[in-house]
Image (cartoon, rainbow, N blue to C red; front, side):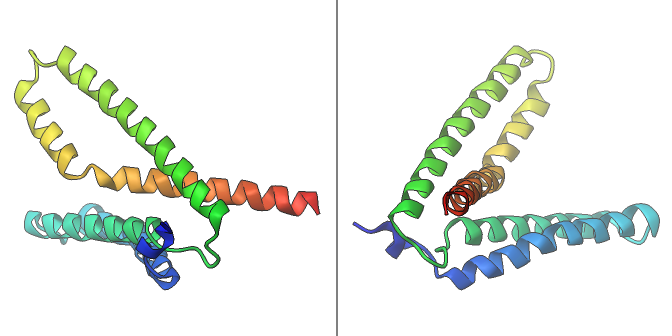
Length: 150
């Protein structure tokens, strides 16, 4: 079965990059409004955070699940490797943070509980980003080797 049928068209990747670039710009504007201009109240801050999460999540989602311009077997192999490496890293990070919280459970139980719930709700943000970094690194290395070989 060709997994490229499950991927979004390449133009979705371009939209994803635009959204991903818009996220830090929106964050900078919010920080300026909150810290420098002092014109944001607490309710707006919650909306701004939701917008930031939406931009970052949607951007990374579209980039991670969109086709490259030319999708072939080598790129599918890179996708599989990137997914596998990302999964290993995610499990390792989950185990380490879980161990830290278990060791600290007596002192900060409530804070830990709230933080773990928050992390579970937003678990896909950093992992989509990590997958993109690993996958794009594989692509850059293979293009460099191909260029160097010629």
